[in-house]
Image (cartoon, rainbow, N blue to C red):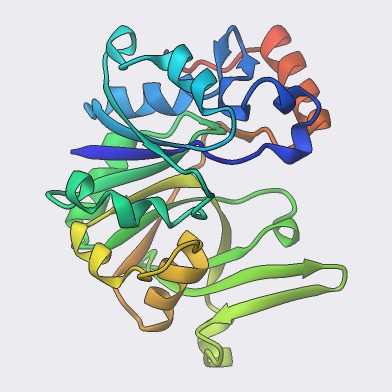
Amino acid sequence: MKALILAAGMGERLRPLTEVTPKPMLELGGHPLIHYPIAMLRRAGIIDVAINLHHLASVIQRGLGDGSRLGLHISYAPEPVLLGTGGPLNGLRNFLGGDTFVIANSDTILDLDLSAMIASHRDRAALATIALFRPANIDYYSRLEIDAAQKLRRMRLLMRRNPLRYDDYPRNLDAGVAATLSAFMYCGVIVAEPSILDLIPPKTPWSLMEGLFAPMVANAQAVFGYVHTGYFRTMDDLKSYDALKAEFASSPPKISL
């Protein structure tokens, strides 16, 4: 099994730090941020990893090398122009197309049991399984809504926070069905079948959710959620970075690297 780690973003909300250090290489708990998803993949036995690059790409390449020091084989996918969160898939069809694969964010810290998520994905014969988390303020995020069997029945992609406005997939879900669904946020990990590569938009840039998974949900395809109830943090801006550094200093999470 292979994986793609998304690491091409600009990290604009973490400026000025990201003017010299790309977000995936910012230190947290004595390690670059990207080491956390790498360790999650390695614990699940996934060692063939592609990483897309754009902003300060050479810093990431120097820091990770060929992956051998981390127990991986790393292939890099440079993006002279940003391709969006989904666009890297267009150029990685041959790399990812032979088996079930994983997509992971480079800026997420969580103690997800990826092996269990993959097993759940296969047990359900899913085309895609998306890791989900219930935050304290769900209105701050896009809402991914699942039924009792954890099948994704609706995605409400957040367009505006004040006032709240969503782009719904499907647009006209029966109100009775909608009332039975549970809403979560995406927490940075997707398990997918290679057949989804036949559904991706031909032109870049495009977004994973808006361009691929939301339309799949709207068409009632086999997209499932996998609810994570353990540790989950993201580093979105300077304030959250400072808070995370303080948390790791005083009470670090038990995540094996």
